[in-house]
Amino acid sequence: MDHMQRGTLRLDAIRMVVLDEADKMLDMGFVDDMKTILWAMPEERQTLLFSATMPQSILDLVQKFQKDPQLVNVAGEQVTVPRWSRRSSR
Image 1 (spheres, rainbow, N blue to C red):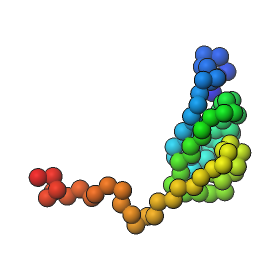
Image 2: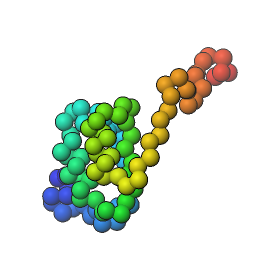
Image 3: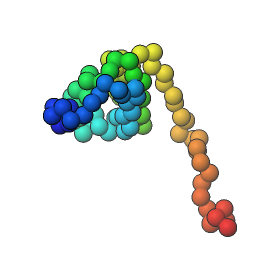
Image 4: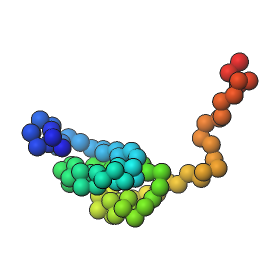
């Protein structure tokens, strides 16, 4: 936001915004900062929000800043990479 205020950052060419750990940023009190940054971005962009949980505050951001949002849910029991073991490293 400092760069935005100074005019040292051009946002007009941004086509994609990725917010990882969005739930953690909200828990830490950054919701207003996140909104300020997202409002400053070009309207025609892709916005990706990654969050381990989906509290109402994340859903509120989705409604305000995403068009046709898609939810991708990964079941907790599924492992995306094989578990490492000593045998598999040989």
